[in-house]
Figure 1: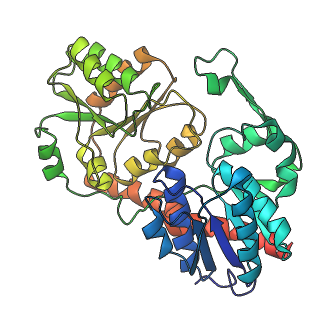
Figure 2: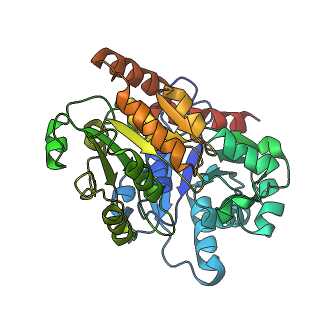
Length: 392
C-alpha cells in the first residue's frame, strides 16, 4: 500500500458498471478495481450478476451489488443504488459507461450521504445527448478522460465536417466547469504483455520462420471494423514486392464473410487470412512481426498499441484522435494518415525492410511501457485524482 493513498482519506469506493459484457471499458473497470484494492482502498463493485463478466466481477471487490432489473427509466436501479450507497457508507461512486452516468448522479443525490461522483469517459467523444452535454459536468465532481484528446473534445469539441466517418464530423464539448475534466491514462497487464517466444503460436497460424507477419488485432464488426478492409487493400498493392510478407486478421466480428471475399477478390489467398479467435493475446502479439492499427473510426487512446510495444513489436498506426499519444510511448514504427491506403502500403514496405529489434532493444521497449503504463501505475493515477477530491 502506498503511504497516504487510502488511510489518510478513508474513502469507501463503489465502481458502477451495468454492462460487464467484456468490452475494453469493462476490462479497464475490473483492472482498476483490482489495482485500487492493491493500493489499500475499500472498493465495491456494482454490476449485473448475470452478465458475461458477472462471476469474475463478483469476487473482485470488497463487496458486490447486483444492479439487477433497472426498471422504467432506470428508476428501480437508481433507488436501489441510493439505498446501497447509504447502507455501505460509500464516499465515492465511480461510473464507467455513459448509460451509468445519470444513475450514479441521481443515486448519489438521493442517498443522503452525498458521495463524490466520478465518471470516466472511455470514448473519443462527449455524451450523445444534448441534455448530458449541457448539464452533466456540473452535476459531478470529476470526469476522467483516458487521453488528452478525449479531454480536449470534452472541453473544446472537435469538428471534422468533411470526414467520411459520421461520428467524427461533429463532436460537441461539455458545458460547465472544465476544470473538472482531468486526464488519467489507463494501463495494460505488463506481467502478461512482455517479450517471449511465440514460435508455437506462429506455427499454429501457419507462419514459417521466414515469414514477416503483419497483423490487425481487434474486432471487425460492421460497418468498417478497425480498418481491416483498408489493410487488405494495402496488402494487395505490396504483396508481390515483399513475397515473404503475410497479412493476418486477428479477432472476430460480423464482417468475417466480407473480409474473406476481399481476400479472394484481391488475389491474397495464401498471403492473407483470418486467424481463429485467440484467447492468449500476449502470445498473439509476440507471434507477429508488426502490429498494424489502421483505425478509421474514432479512438480515445489505443491500448493495443501499448500491448504491441510491451512485447517489443513495431506498430504502424493511424495518426487519429488519441492514437498518437499511445504511439509516442514507444515511438517504434510509423504513424500514417487515417484512411490512406497508399500511405499504409508504403509503410508496410518500409517496415518489412527495416532491421528488426534485438532482444535487448525489445526488453528496453518493454521496460519503458511497464514503468508508466502497468496496471499499478494506472491505478496510482486514478488514486491521485481521488486524493485531490478528498482533500479539496
